[in-house]
Image (cartoon, rainbow, N blue to C red):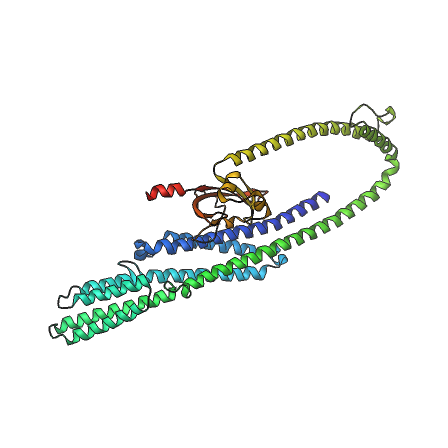
Length: 460
């Protein structure tokens, strides 16, 4: 019963710990998904193959990661400990936000393809209409070029006046073509149709960009997806904080229950021992005396039991105890040697890390710095005392592409902008991985490499 209850206690404690670890892992997966979305809008908007076929490796990877995250979240929600931690409603809200985020992302990707690029989408259709207009020699090509100029000015400068100018010029061109007697009826109808179609496509382009929020970042789908990312981050912070608090409470409840069981088990053992004490009291007393003598002699084994007790089980116990003492002394010596070797190795590797020319750091699972080497301190101009007082890695590493993600477990590096104490910056490569102990995320370890000289050489 005692062993079985211990196994149950360890199993339940492990389940609680695994729940919090799974939440942290899900958080990292969602952050990676956000980065994929950012990469899609920065890379695929110039990929003609995407506009031609609608297929994108980034879209497929985003969909796969999103489905895996939803599956993990569903598994977590169905766990019994989620309700006991009181985070079930927050998990439901997170699920709803993630699904809505994916819906908005897909809508934004569809709008991006509708907008088009070069010969595809609305942009491609407009180009086709202009090329057809250039094929009519009786049409004033200066005005046609004016349409294109207003279109480019709007795209580059993002000013509403060019929308008005293009529409006014298109209307003037239509009126001019209607009045020009040199243009035949058939050509007149074709030209007017092309101008009207070009104007309609341009206005459709303006409407789509407004809906997307490309020209006005404070509105549209771009703003909506940005706010959703912020809200999802807040939900994760709430869930993680609540889970950590409840984990401590659940551990305390398990420990109280375990202590109660242990007390009952101990009480039962005492009652049983009293029933057999008459038979074993004398041998145990003698055994106790021998053990006291042994302790007083600093575990030196010079005494033996009297022949009177040789037929008692106590003598066997005592002999085994003597063997145990010998083993303990040996293990104690081995432990002292191991501890000395461990201390020497730790000091050696700390010195090695301090002698490295690259900045090396370690953090806890929240990104708070727990160790930096001398190169790190020299690079960022901080003192050891300032680091010990509390500093997060996000204070010195910045990225414009999305949330800061550590521990990608890949062999590739990530380019960041590092910020020194005086506010100056330098480009750098960052290599990181996770630190796990007992299957639990404990933090991150990484190296920061200054690539300023490399960039300067490339620029030359």
